Length: 127
Length: 143
Image (tube, rainbow over the protein chains, first blue to last red):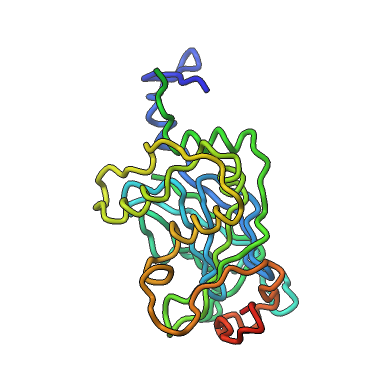
């Protein structure tokens, strides 16, 4: 593996500091199935997820974040699981707890107080 | 002279050429009497890295980093990677990394609070997910 060391990246006319690229890249991401037998579809920098309970999951990092002051962007895609029927557009993903070693993400239906399992949960972490 | 790549770089490189491995196991554990049993699901890319070797740091570094304050340099991203593990060893590694020592090391009660189980024994019907507890019946091993 080779390493390119550069302070700036340019397309010939516009130049940006390479720190934009480094700091703007997701430091971890994951896409998993939160229904039936919970399983991870794909990821980067994730060691495992913890199925905490209905609609509540914890993403455990392999390379920990420096602190808990990072950002989590999470989206959900509901599905008819045979038990619950979801209106995809009305579901929301909520980050609950941030720790250097894990991020908790949850799914809730706006019309209900309870957490709901979702067919697809995606989360990206920026630090 | 060779320099050890940062763990994040090793993970990114591994993802580019290793085939993900879906584990045959899950880890059931209870870290609170008032909450349902939790299920640890190994990541397929992480498992591939564990089986391949020369990517993940020693588990000791994660355990020492638990005592390092936020914002301070951690040891595990820069540690020399360890060799390949079996799937069983990788699961044990994950337990120590991602589950509180209060469950796998310090618990002294009689109740079974941690179990490694084949994935097919985890219930796929989650209708009563928040009522899951680890069965204490020695004849049964699932939740």
